[in-house]
Length: 109
Picture 1 (cartoon, rainbow, N blue to C red):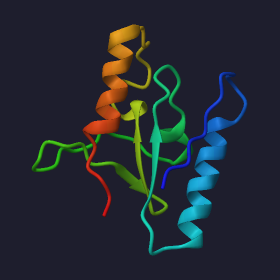
Picture 2: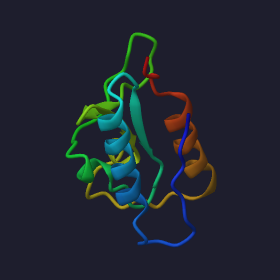
Picture 3: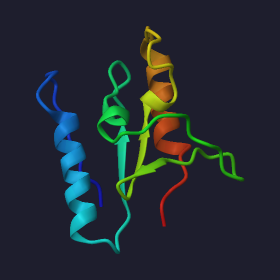
Picture 4: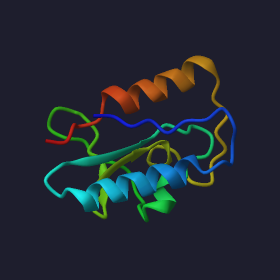
């Protein structure tokens, strides 16, 4: 099951809403795995909101392992780029990064 939080407008609380949904879902049913995917290329805030730093490790099958906190597996562009580095990606580079986040992350079981 997937819940998408999206908006064409910036600064409306998408990340805050997504984090609160993930935390509520994890607290409501601990038997289910909850993950949070942040595909905001230009301003990823999930690492800060979930109190996570570092880069994902690679599994045996060469897939990125999500970082964990509060019982929630998180994957974000913020883990893949330097925090202070400016991101000046366009078109295909953005799509390639999003594809990597969607297809090259180890799934939860």
